Amino acid sequence: GGTQTVTNGIDLAGEGGMVWAKSRDVAFAHMVVDTVRGGGMKLEPQSTAAQSYKTTLTGFTSSGFTVGSSGETNWNNDNLVSWSFLKAAKFFDVQTWTGDGTTGRQISHNLAGEVGTLIIKKTSATGAWIVYHRSLGTSKYMALESTSQALNFSAVNTVTSTYFVSDNQNASGATYVAYIFAHNDGD
Image (cartoon, rainbow, N blue to C red):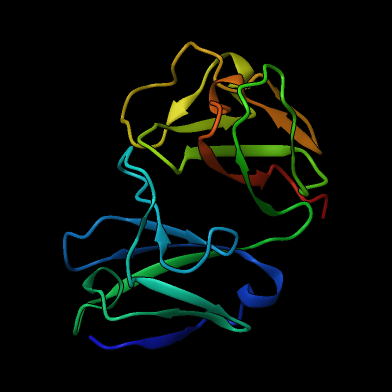
């Protein structure tokens, strides 16, 4: 019920990354917070809502993260679960950008390997969670907040080991975040 540090052995403060957390006992929403947008800036994967600030996951440490007094991540006597993804080449990357409305704009990333899954979310306003998966190619996408099957529409135009293009996720003045997961690190 109070503030506390969660130690998971992952250097999120130095290396960067993302934490996805969820209460197991109380009907709170899932939440995603990353080191690029900063502690407290949460997104809810089951919702199309814009990002919001809340004292949930409030910061990142060299061995995990800190949570505030918000019930969503620290309800008294509640069981919670979290998944942490460290930014690392051939594993995971986080990128943010402000849209400029340009068709074919390349958004660089540091994955340095084949992209397995790419999740894009508009953070400044309501918008779907666009999910590209390599098995679907660029002719279909899924929406994270939906239970619908893959949609026959290209939401991501191009995906390479160093950049991606998503003309539908580049509205002038809008802000976005992308979570980029590698297919295979080669090991």
